[in-house]
Figure 1 (cartoon, helix red, strand yellow):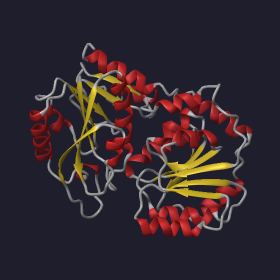
Figure 2 (cartoon, helix red, strand yellow; figure 1 turned 90 degrees about the vertical axis):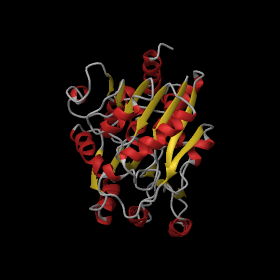
Figure 3 (cartoon, one colour; figure 1 turned 180 degrees about the vertical axis):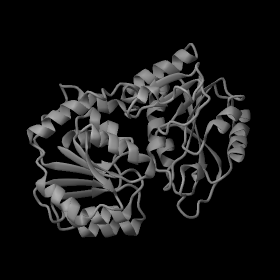
Figure 4 (spheres, helix red, strand yellow; figure 1 turned 90 degrees about the horizontal axis):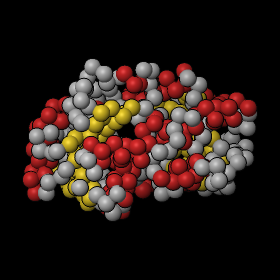
Length: 358
């Protein structure tokens, strides 16, 4: 089959949506299916991720975003009608059997337009919105997550809900296996707030960790302007216990070798859970607030709150008091690993192919 992914990545969107679509595409490609990515060009250079992964890329149109959109509804930069029309024009050139969409700005109105032009529609979402599709995937762990879509999707929609369907790359299940999982005995803390660099937050964190020497740190900044990254590099130039990089293709390996993490409450949550990596998390986007609060309430993570409100003193005190070798964190490690087994992409792939009788 030919499978199309409608997804975007940009500074105002992040790269999480694109990464989880790429993960699913790897599994579908391994089954012999052709995968094409349909994306808007925001002029920020994130789509090398698609091309480097060996997938086809179709650009729908160049789009400029001025100030940071206040709502996910404004992420697109054009109207629903324009986006759907440009997408349909691409589909007329080369038909696809299945469309998979992962986009907060594309809603049920877009879905109703596109359903007329594709055999099957799969939606990936986190926001409990109304949908009209054949399969709905929401991998998040919320109160009553299995009932979140009961009255806002058709009864015929196949719902894949909860961490059981987390879209993780194969290497996470590899490192999770007892044979390959090393005993945690390092003092290494992995710090990452997503694929798009938050310069202000990173500055704040670096100021603190340069004064807490009892740990080794790996800091992955995400994409930053060259001068900003070089400035952050200069701040840690004389610190042998701090390693800094913009990105890594070996995130599973880095997580596996770390004993604790500090990061955002995005899709990386489930990668950490899969490998039993305890973490202190911050909210870097409004749509992370509810999940962050619930994970903290369930005692699955440490909650550092909204990144705007996180003070250097607060982070300094947290790191000074942190005991990553404690029984408390050992028990929590077991607890979080029970939620994610690393096979969610396999299950999702099977459901999609069953839908098309493949």
